[in-house]
Image (cartoon, rainbow, N blue to C red; front, side, top):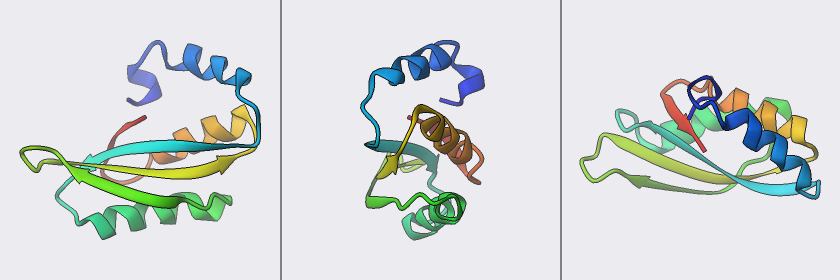
Length: 100
């Protein structure tokens, strides 16, 4: 979910201060399946690699009706603010609908 549409998001992100940093986190981006898996991964890479994040272990899955694609990957973050910045950057990826 985008941070604006989920009132509990910021509360949960504040709980992430209990995480030991640096941390390897799994991010999941729900995207439109109008584009190929490769194109959606390229969009994610193009958005976050310039910020210093190196996504790894991509995996994807189509929804039952084939309208949505769930793309998961791992990234290293050094702090709670890095995690928030990664989330905010992913929410701006073209075609991204939900960020988990």
